[in-house]
Length: 343
Image (cartoon, rainbow, N blue to C red; front, side, top):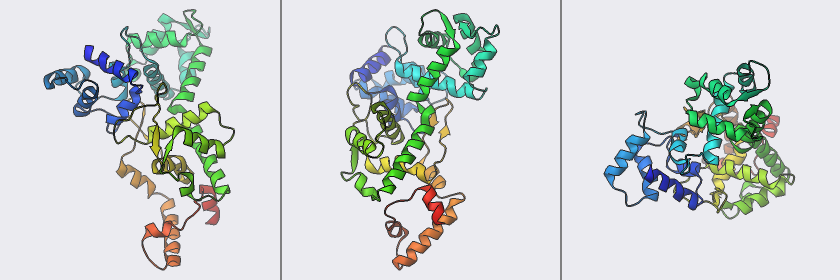
C-alpha cells in the first residue's frame, strides 16, 4: 500500500492523469505483470525485483494475470484516506452506466429499486439496489457508498432521481458516453474543410498539433464550439492515439501537450468515411482495436468494391503505378455523402 500510495502521489504531483499512465503501458486494454511492474518502476526506480513480484500478486487478486482499468484505478485512484479521486469516480460511473444500460438504463433500474415510488433512495436502498446487480457490477460496498455521497449533491442523505440523472449527464459530457457527439462534430468539421477546398496537408503544416493549434483549427471551421467542448474533443483525440512513450501532461489539466498530425487526421476525419465500433473490454470501457483489426475494418464490407473501383479508375488516369500514388490524387478528400453521390 505504501508503494502504491507513493506512485499515486507521484502521478498527481507530475500532473499525469491516472488513465493516461494506464494507456501508456496497457496492451489491448489491460496491464500484464511486466507492464504493471513498468508502471511502478517509472515512479519507484530503486524498488527491488522481489518487491515488485509481491506487489503484482497483491494487485492481481483474482489471479487472472492481468489488470483492467477498473482494477488499476482501485489500486492507484484513492487518496491516503481511501477516498476515490475524480478520475476513479468517472471510471466507476461509466462502468455503472454501461452495465445498467444492458438492463434498460439507469432510469429503469432506479424505478425498480424505488418500490414506494418516492423518486428517491436512502443510502441503504442504494446499496441494496446495487447489490442486486452485484454479479454484473462487482462494486465494493465502499465504492457504492462513495458514489452515493458524490451524487447526493444536496447532502440530504436521500438520493433523488434528479440527482442520478444529473450525475449521468455529467458522465456523458466528460467520458466516452458522448462518442456520438464527438463523431458528429468531427463530421461537421470535415464537411466545412471540404467546402473550402483545402488539401489535408494544409491542416497541419508543422506535422503535429499542440492544444492551442488544435483549438485554433477547430475554432476556424467550427466557430460555435466552446472552450470546454474543444478540450473534450482534444481529450478524445489524445485517447484514440496511444503514446509511444510516457509523456508529461499539461499542468493542471491531465491533457497531452501535442499529438501527431497523421493520428489526428485519422481520428478526426476517419468517421466521415464510416466509423467502426470499438470493442468493449470486460470492464465496459471502450477498447482500442489492434492494428490487424483496423486493417480488416478498413478494407472489408460493402464499401470495398466501391473503393477498388475508384482505385482502378485512378490507376488508369495515372497510367499505372502503385495504389498509394493513385490515392495521392484525391485532394481535397471527400465525405461519405459526397462519395456516394459521385457513385
